[in-house]
Length: 438
Image 1 (cartoon, rainbow, N blue to C red):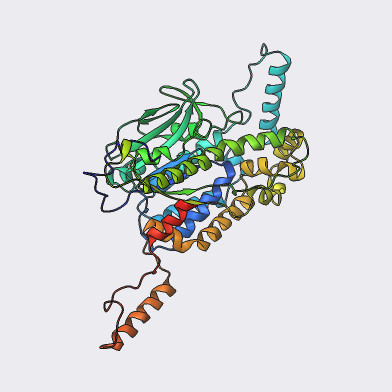
Image 2 (image 1 turned 120 degrees about the horizontal axis):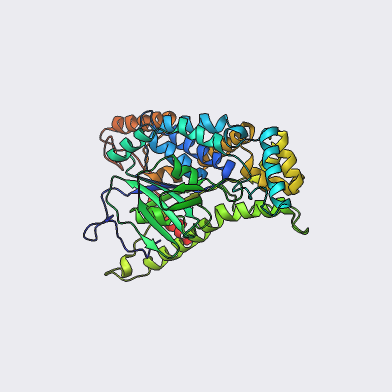
């Protein structure tokens, strides 16, 4: 957040860089992360083919870390990166993430049952209820790590950060691979370390507690990065971001079904995942807004503690993913539906939990479509924030016609130089001020 010393040299001599460093932050969210793909598809659609990523920094947690790694491995072509993400998420089935067949589910259930009945004497308690070996195989096929390292070496992007939770140390650990010098950080409950990223870091970041087994990495065992991530924007800021685009997966005010009833296990589990993946983000954005407002009130002169103004733009679903999941519940394998019924996920009471676990194409494609629509509704805002010159073909033709008409006027009065591109009279700074005040 502003208030972090400028450790990584994002500014020199107090002067702003010629081009702002833009970070993309992708929080976790299980199946809901398909929404991020829709937003990215929309952004890619505004740009000409072959355009590289507009982000210098990629930061991801859990499913968001997987999306970030795929983007980084295809960073030279935003269109291809978005298309590849769409191909995976749009064709998803639960059995590509974890084994949900009758035999696998029966084995998991019996293991848990015998462990409980024997007090751990016959079998130890399982480290995870579900076997996510299929996800490991999918990521091994989908992410080209040598190509990712080559992209980082060329600076497109220059940094990738993957967040996991140390189950031994109890802190949030950001694993960073970067071609840009940065100083590893250590703060209360969180730290950043330089590594060469591989499949294990992604599996650790996405190891949802209780569901998936923790992953061993040199330095200990690690689980889902959202567990202890109280400041999701911090890695991007430590890596020198000036602007941060955040693609969240939760509607600001999701409906609370059966608010007057005592919550059952499915509702509590869904609430736990919802809190795990979203609450830190909202509080971090509030802190950023408050600190930016404080900086705006300072008198000219040295800024205390190396604080600096950092812009953020948040894109969130306009529709409740939990309600959307209910319409696609029948797509889930029968064995998993049975498990969810045992937990109490019936009807409206199961929507929230279902939305995190419904890795089925009917649901993920709907989220992708929603992400595209939500981004399209904010196209001017997002494009200006990213500094994109990605007008549509129709807009480009209209601008060309305007320029021809201005040139035909010849000696007539002109409010801009011949051939100069007209721009929105509302400056970007005004749009940022509106965000800060909100």
